[in-house]
Image 1 (cartoon, rainbow, N blue to C red):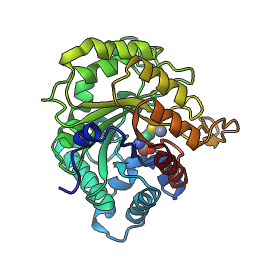
Image 2 (cartoon, helix red, strand yellow; image 1 turned 135 degrees about the horizontal axis):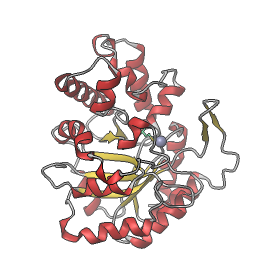
Image 3 (tube, rainbow, N blue to C red; image 1 turned 180 degrees about the vertical axis):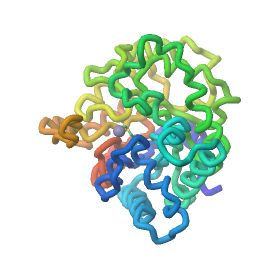
Image 4 (tube, helix red, strand yellow; image 1 turned 120 degrees about the vertical axis):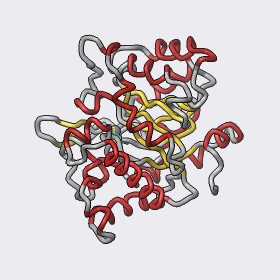
Length: 325
Ligand code: MET
Ligand SMILES: [Zn+2]
């Protein structure tokens, strides 16, 4: 294997900070793929022509996107599987059986690996339970979020990702609800046998979308003590406001000073759900240089961008990472 295992890399090189790619879903949209549908950025992979026609436009666009992120300096990249849970796929596409679903995931992962080569790290991206009902930015999981069967929801995607050697890390992203975090962290190595991280979905003022404070999240993790799954490698924030993200990460670091963190904020633009357009970040208080420097001072080991960040943003992230490590 050309790459050393990620866990080993993080432990043996305490100064190393990995540059992550940017928002794949919105970047595919920038490049002309229409992603407005219930499985969002999974859509290009659903059509059989993606797989049968080597020269398909969508295939070329995905490849070019990965190439551009790598050219910008990304060394860890994500599969485009945020909205690819068995539930979302089987309810909204012609792919209905577990067998066909499994094939879809393996094809996506193996194609992503081909695109990024053997040297770079690949994350198997998993969106939150709330993604299939679009509430990852409200955290409103109904009256009894503690009763949701998170395991049943994630199991098909996990079973596939756990066993695919092309993946180095599993990323649970944009998790807005404390009960969902508790569920994920209750799973042992039999359920989650690959290294994984959790990216929290947080408000600008710094609480989880459901109102839980970073201190409470940290306390919950501390309380797990030795019972914690050894594959839990990193905790962090993603798709959070660009401007407030350094403060939020620093709070997390204050409460979990020894835990490796990660951060990949969105561009700071706001999505207007009525007009269906992105409103520009008129109040961009920080530059990537400042944001990245502050992340690194707060223990971040993986840094990149989420929605609406582009290869240009990742170039700036990479330059700052070089400057401050
Ligand atoms: C809503 S956050 C989505 C993150 C995901 N990695 C993507 O850009 O495709
Ligand atoms: Zn995002």
